[in-house]
Image (cartoon, rainbow, N blue to C red; front, side, top):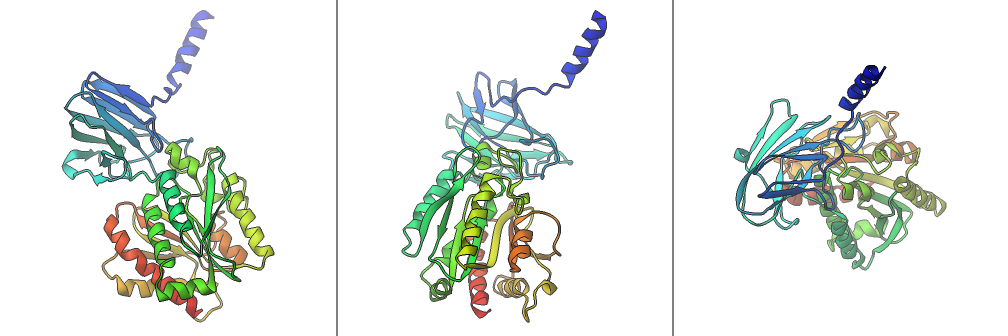
Length: 381
């Protein structure tokens, strides 16, 4: 019996996953993820200047393949470090970026990164002096970034800012909006923590909508603008791949509204309905492997001009070198933002996706075009 029990426990032990280890160190290097947006699951020292890191999702599979990683290298002396990263239930979707201040980021040169053909692991080589260096899947746009944006928006004479609700862990879900109008345009962002390029596009897009141009002033005179920049603050701070703290993909909770983050928006929509404010367009900003726009099918609307087709066609004419795809899809049973707003309001509800590795300057230069053509077309409707 003792032998049987020993064999049982030995077998059981082989299936126990090692606990998360947010840091490891050698005599020359400390590696850690003990900061907002940091994420490693396990870290071990191989030799004095070589470290192995395991990245895995916050919840058991299935999960969207968005393997976020972010860690800090703190050298104790000048050294040439090698960081071997392996991905559990994921692959190396994001090319590593580095920063010495957490604000300015540089894409690592190709000669410093080696990826396995199947993408399940990669190795980074980096020369370090005595300055700490952050290595991250994407730029870290944290709540402080959004606090700064909210302060910027609140300085606009037409905007009021407020806290819509709280996340699971009590972080604010903030909103900025212009005055009440019968017609409303909504902008929603950062449901999925790693999707940083979509967040960059959203801020640039809103900048054009709230500008002092004649077009923007006419647009705001007709439409009320509702901006919800960061709906998943817990996931962003904790370095999640996809979910909120309860393990829920917020972009699959529109309709059920089981989570406090989406419930805060549901309360807003109910209030708007009671005050005869009617949504006319919803844009939900995301990121994926390449830039694209998920829309309804042209035949889903009883209008002479399909908004999405006209919008994207006009934009493409102005920025022909910017690659993006228009991907119209029929309604599905998925409880995402796009489906919810179309089903409940019969309006164009569009998932605005920017490619993970799109040049950041290209985002800044092309996004205003999409914003301007959106405003022109909405004013024509």
